[in-house]
Length: 137
Image 1 (cartoon, rainbow, N blue to C red):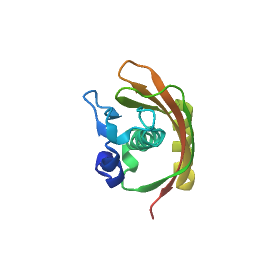
Image 2 (image 1 turned 180 degrees about the vertical axis):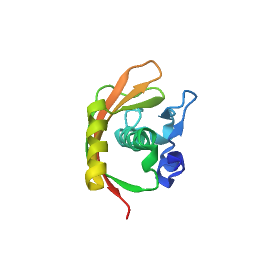
Image 3 (image 1 turned 90 degrees about the horizontal axis):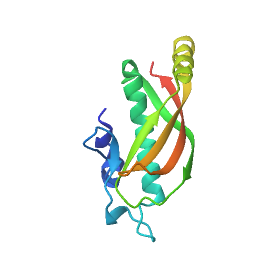
Image 4 (image 1 turned 90 degrees about the vertical axis):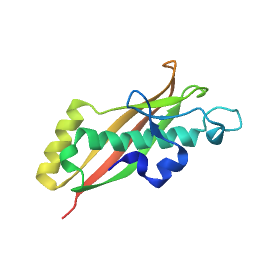
């Protein structure tokens, strides 16, 4: 699945940037009352990047599972005053446990961490996204 083709993702304006990361351009359409990128736009970028990370890390599961975001936590650190990009990661221990549970039970949970940085490398927000993944029978 091309994640940037999801209707909501398109509406928000999330795209792949020149470095291949998901990002948002600094555009008035996603500004808040302080003329910085709105918190909900940053959340949407981080959540979308966490979902894409699942596809990247587990390509063998694409089309064979249904991933659902179970819960998340995000912290806004600095105003986003420039274009931003998402940098997701999953610990190797989490990957190992996830694969083990998927093999045994056909379902598992996994946490994806995401940093949102502006074009100067300033971290504007960080998030933790907990996914529940169920095999399709």
